[in-house]
Length: 233
Image (cartoon, rainbow, N blue to C red; front, top):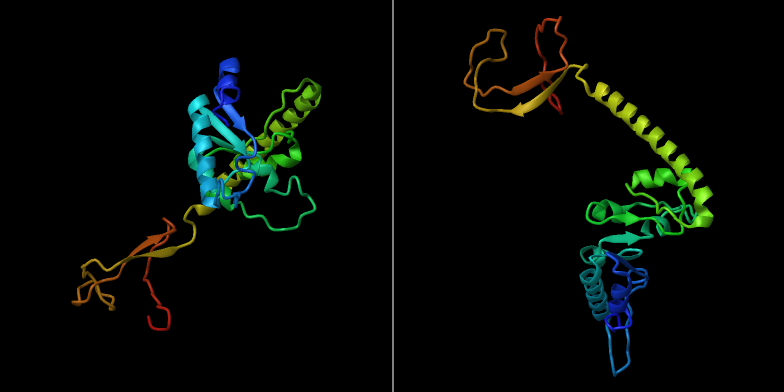
């Protein structure tokens, strides 16, 4: 049906788009048909949907659809709506714990956007930052005044968040500086320079190779005592 002259080919002829959105391909689940004239299994339906996605990409160049499915990652260029329908933004009273597993697994493989009905608002900006997405920007004339106000507010939130993150990263870098003495185990690598006695000479037993960190330059090391788990030193 999509390839009939009055469908996709005519859209391409009339408007020559370079990006095409086809609704509900991913939003609708996989269906099964028991009609003996055209039986279809869910696996068949999945294959047909992938073929439709590939056909639309071949016609227009870039293609996306509503929601998103893992079987569609390799057959689309973006998912629209997943970052609204699968978060608390559209269900503020829902107290379920949401784990963005899909975004963690596929977020670097395909852009995942909010729903087109969303408008940029400061209270949604944090969600966008956490999952690394950006809301759709409406260009409707009747929304223009609200869009300008909200977009400015969103940008202010972004700048504040970036500043806060930069400060936290700076503090984390300072905290990571070696200020507390510690020993890092490097293994035994065949050397024999010392023994348990104070005299630095071999004893035919491989030495323990440790790297000391966080030492003060103005203090002298008198000795090192190593205790193992379970007792002994």
